[in-house]
Length: 167
Image (cartoon, rainbow, N blue to C red; front, side):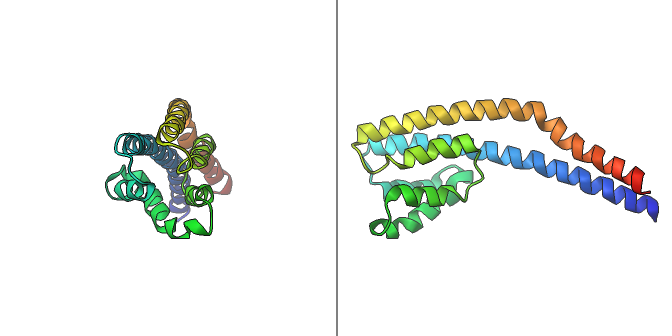
């Protein structure tokens, strides 16, 4: 019985470490999905001169999978556009996403210029945001590659140590 309890403790610690690794990978996919969706948004705004609600509808239906919820919630909040400014709606939808701080900051800055300026200026703002997100993605990917074993191994070792101490 004690052996089973110790194994369960070690397994739970390992599962926690594995969930940390998966959460980091999920954040990476979200940032990469945002980059792809912003490239689509840039082309919709600059080439087709599509209004933002149409762009958000397109991205919520056919955009990258990790970002569809963001654009769907943004599309749903567009009804409150007269009561609140767009940047606040954008930030409210962005705050629910599991983005790294650097990526959230870059996207928040973008929200302040979308819908306010000419198509060319919006395109420039989107390009700046894409570049910041690419840099953030590359940096996070490199860092997560270095720390993945640590995130998995440290909780596992703590579980083994706790099991030895307790049993």
